[in-house]
Length: 46
Image 1 (cartoon, helix red, strand yellow):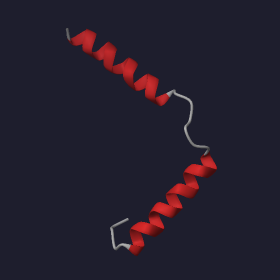
Image 2 (image 1 turned 135 degrees about the horizontal axis):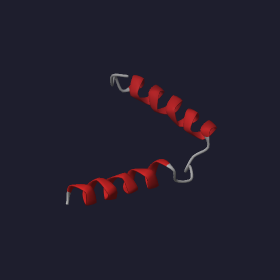
Image 3 (image 1 turned 60 degrees about the horizontal axis):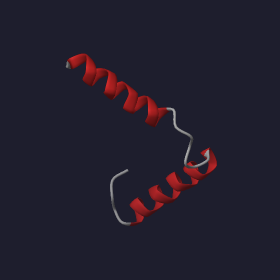
Image 4 (image 1 turned 120 degrees about the horizontal axis):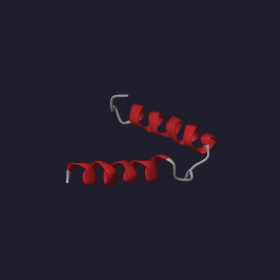
């Protein structure tokens, strides 16, 4: 049972980590900058 769970869990994370990117690296960086700016404007911590 434990091995079955480990195998299933590993497969789940491999699928997530090795999946095709949703955003390009540039889009991700732009989104990160925008989010950081908005959080700063609204007085959230970094």
